Image 1 (cartoon, rainbow, N blue to C red):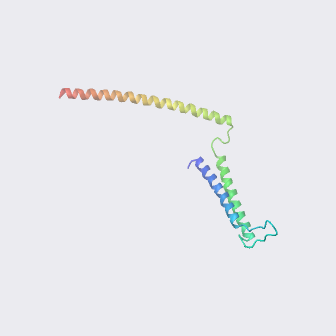
Image 2 (cartoon, rainbow, N blue to C red):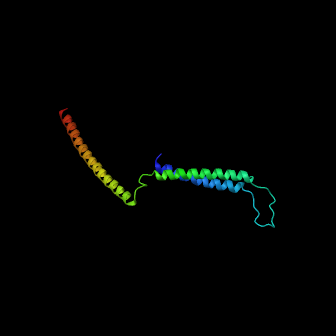
Image 3 (cartoon, rainbow, N blue to C red):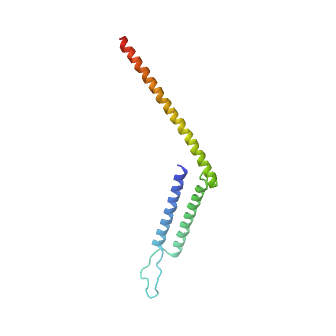
Length: 133
């Protein structure tokens, strides 16, 4: 798996952890009265200590995933280079690409010329054989 795909997967996993954590905490938190005159009539959610433990586990998972994401970013090629150095590297790659394109086009042209020569030679051989028969 290439580095960008790993990075995208790590970002997706971190986002999923955030969403799952919020969902878990929202569904399992106890209700809190907003108005002292309106009592809460149903018991909802986990006990406070269980909710606190699960929140700590979720926070730990998120921090681990964030650290993994940071490591992946730090290991990206060129991340430690200045923007000017990255630009120079890209220009060098563009020059190498242009040279490779020229070589490729030259090889294709030469191959077409050889194909033409072979076609003419085969045609001449076929004509000679048909005349001699």
